[in-house]
Length: 612
Image (cartoon, rainbow, N blue to C red; front, top):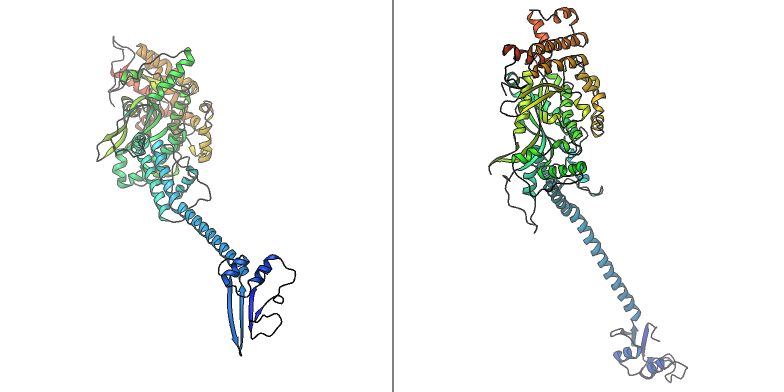
């Protein structure tokens, strides 16, 4: 039977009936007459003289399955042929299972190796590529959020938010490996590019990080061509900076950074989306940009607005790249521009409130180098804003470049800021800005004069939002960063009527004062200067009485009668009257008196500002 383990046995000398003469053992006597199948008969037939290969052939076994084993002991010889087919089958099965196990083990090892390579090499490389591509598409849209403010990275830990920015799963975390350090380095570099160059440098970053259609990177060219954009440009400057520089020496950098922190937070917070950016610092001054869009974007928005209003779009064959075409676009017709402009102005007003509320800034009032610990010093700032077009781009060479804006509107914003000193005001807005604002905001502004700004040939009305901090405790209105961010995100024009900061900083302005000043200004503009002087002086007195009677200032009640006396010759009283009174009223009265008290015959209701 092929199933037996022993295929044939031979015992010498023969000693049992189941052996033939040669000593070979058979299942039955050699005649094999018992009823068996043909296969057994065939085996028996060839049993005696068959070789191992022949037996394997008869049994249907594979080669070398039968094994012949001779054993000699005490004159007896036993030869056994073993059938190892079962053992071979089991061995083959085990070999197959072993090979499958090895294959599975190799696949699992390769998968694990691939996972490690993917986590430690490929994913970090993809992250770095995503960072580069993200900044190539929009260098300004990737500002990470920190716990301390709306935007910006305040510390190294904030760079961990990069994974969420890149849509990576929470399981895909890296340890302190070289690739992680490289990712952090690339992130910091790109973040520094954004922070150092701002919105003006976005085109430079994007152009130089972009790829050609075939996937090759472009040739490095830092001095890329500029492009025409529309924006609201604001300047904020620290007053008496020369005095601060002389007094503080190297510590002046700490003061500037304390002020910059407040400015940047409010500009980013109140800018619509990513539009609010601080472009650069010019010593005591900060240039703020609220970018509306480039020429094509604004032109398309303007066309859509005209289509809504007039029901048709005028054909425009090509873009005219000159100043006239740039100036002809009516920004006030752009959808949503009033909320955009409102938020820009709010950014400056909230900066003014923040400067007079931030502890790090207020602590400078106690600095012995400035106030001798008696609070004689306070950080004063001036703000100016204009709206229009500019050329945005890089100025310099392959050695050094600066990302900036070149435009008469940038210069006009600077002139507005400088004119604050002439009028004794905190903020001045150009006519171009006023035309973009919502009606609730416009009602809070005051038209103070119509002038030719030095260096400009265009007549324009200039406006102010009357803002003061003396006697105002802005700490009472302090809100957390989260609450302030929510206020900015949920902005509506009604905020101009209910915001506590705005109400407090304008508390010295009464309807009586506004009406009286408007009468005096109108008389001045039409050339009736004698009546204008009367009304403007009356408006100045109204403001002085309002400030004194408000009870917000300390140690004023005892001097009330002297302060409201316009004929007092006391120097301290004169100084306080100038501080409490209305700067524009005094400025226009002084101009009228300088011109002899009567308007010239060619008076056209506008005057030239005498300084920048």
